[in-house]
Length: 356
Length: 77
Image 1 (cartoon, rainbow over the protein chains, first blue to last red):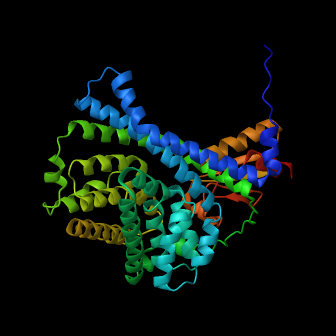
Image 2 (image 1 turned 180 degrees about the horizontal axis):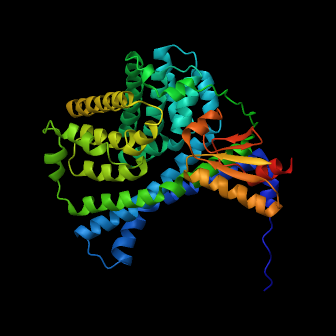
Image 3 (image 1 turned 90 degrees about the vertical axis):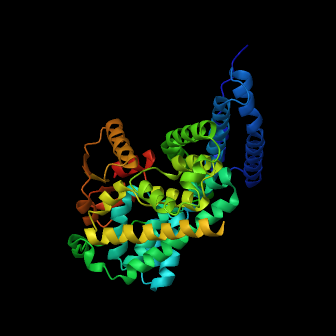
């Protein structure tokens, strides 16, 4: 049989302007296939664990392995969808636009806007310092800048997508609401503390004119390519954390007895919230790695408030970030930043242990 | 032609450097590449996203990894 070479014209036509109708049809089909596969995952993971592998039903190992084979593809599929969608939204925003929008805003409204923009502005923690300088020198108030810097790593599409998939929309909404609350109020308090003179002098003296980059006009096709790029970049970066996180979660799920966590991370022990924060701050992980662990802890009786506090302190406050920020902030301001954010996290932790 | 890549050394910054060096090799351009990792120096250029690419004192791209085709266009000027 003669092999017919694959034609590349499809891709070419697509770029030149594939009919909109077909693009929508392809999109809907892709989402439908995604949904069917997603629904099929529990059956698949149970089949792999008990039929394909020689593992006994009702065993500890079986519970762990099934959890692992269910959660890994599930989390990856959710990440794929959410990162792609948010990637397309993000293509409408740039740090430059966000800054222009925030400069000259009054303090409280500025804090709220900065926290919200922190969710959707493309931001990589390695550019925290240039971004900080760019914001402050352009007249964005210090507290507003902090609201952005707190919200950007904490309330992001990865965290929300995973929480929604693993723990339901209620927990995702609570996380988003309290994360924004902390970003807004911590930023506002830092602004009230009048710590502007605790920024390193070289930053305040920096006279660098902000260079403007001409803005690109993006077509929808460019935005889809951008979203796809975000998928490749983010999943390429976090997949290993996801797998390690799920493996740790699977271990907890299968081998830690029910209710053990209730005595350590339950709501009866008042010290569990501050302890979670103290353990969480030096730990450095991203949302993708910590949320599968959180899911398993909750399943074993840990209290929601305690777990939220743990997760937020791991994601929002980290030693490497402090080391980077030390280049632009004097120790007192870093101390204020950690203190205010940690207090906000404690407050959220206690609040949810009280009301749930 | 003087190319400066600003970035503290994150994954995207390294990828940008790799791509630019690749294009230079492919096109046989005589451009020089300098990587700037010091925060103070990066800030002095007035950009606030990394990686950023500066060619002959002009900011070409900021906050993302440039596309290979874009790099080729820059090098041709």
